[in-house]
Image (cartoon, rainbow, N blue to C red; front, side, top):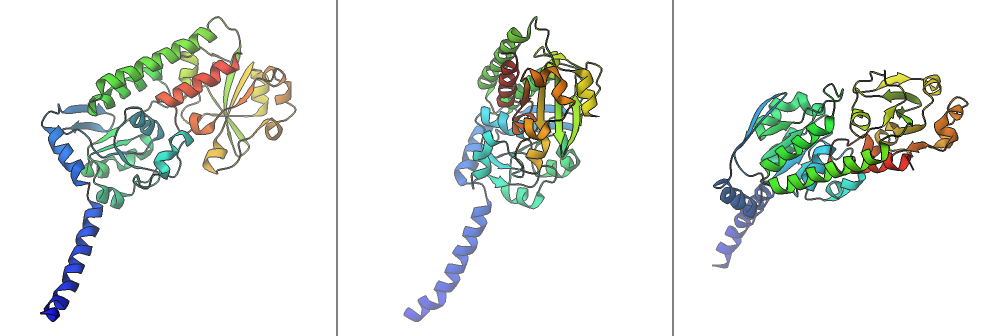
Length: 326
């Protein structure tokens, strides 16, 4: 009798191990049950975007985001995030990077389709950086492409950001919460405008990248700083586009801004210390009004570069602008 137990036990153990391995790759049973229960009361949401039309028919329980603005929005709406790209994560969202329960689903520009297949998300949010993978991602789960206008061609990009927040709120069945967040953004904008209204100071937004400089004007990802926050551009004719217009120290000298915002891309991408007055100093910059009035601001690049169109980033950028006028 005991021998029969010895013959059966290895097979039983192997079966249990295999079952456990498969279960680890599956969504939790409670999650599946909750999703099935919620589906009965859920109103499907159809979203049209630059890459197509996406229809969400069930309340998302396992959401993946590849963009920091999207992750911030999901965080604000208390969404069930199960996967992100962990190569470049804003510090204020680091808890998602450090949480082992949140899977690393590839780099910012290259989704890991195998991991996503195992993860089984029911909603994926992407930005233009992942657009080339849209078809493959859409086969795995409803995928929404947030087509951020990095050229600010229509102006007032924050209005688009607010509408996108409301859309995600509708998908997550968090309409009231999304409305609260939009009201918060409106209040933030009003607070900045109250400071910039009637002020004559001009400003430049400059990106530092391994010693090279680029300027961002009205037609750029930072256009809302000018057309919505009310900051006056020191070089209003700059047509910078998504990557900025390459400039020289002579350009900054000629523009002679009262305020200079410096975003250090190198600090983010190469994980270095942010540049400062000592490392950026040169004779031409030292002659500008911004330099001499101590109005050169080395802003947090994880906020300004990694994430620019969501509530937390808007708040932080607004704080930087208000500080510049004190």
